[in-house]
Image (cartoon, rainbow, N blue to C red; front, side):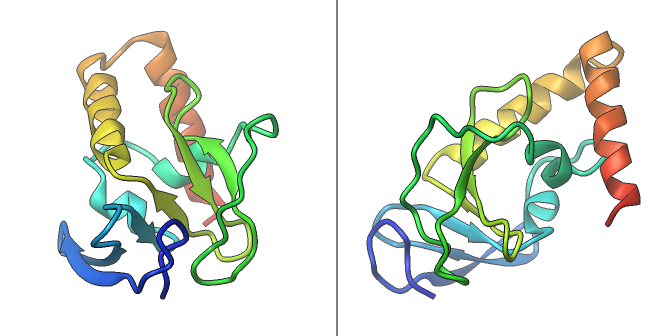
Length: 134
């Protein structure tokens, strides 16, 4: 598999007991479908499902999926976060630029710290809905 940013082969690394692909040059990660749920900090629900909407059509993306070679879409990690990640609609994979996994984990930690706020309750509800469709 080739890095969509650097055009060099990706290495296999282990994060949270999960094999993922990483670029040794730019530090980006390719995650197959369901791997983001496995490597991110734990939270109720399905992180990947709750991240798929809304899409950012105004954010142009020219990154091609390293698996499918189709142009990926730029999406929000979470409705409340300003973390924009790349997603392939064809295979369900994600490209995370260097530092985005850390940002995602910080956001999850914040959500976990605010256990019963209305925003967290709605976010968890939406994430749980996603688990019914997987």
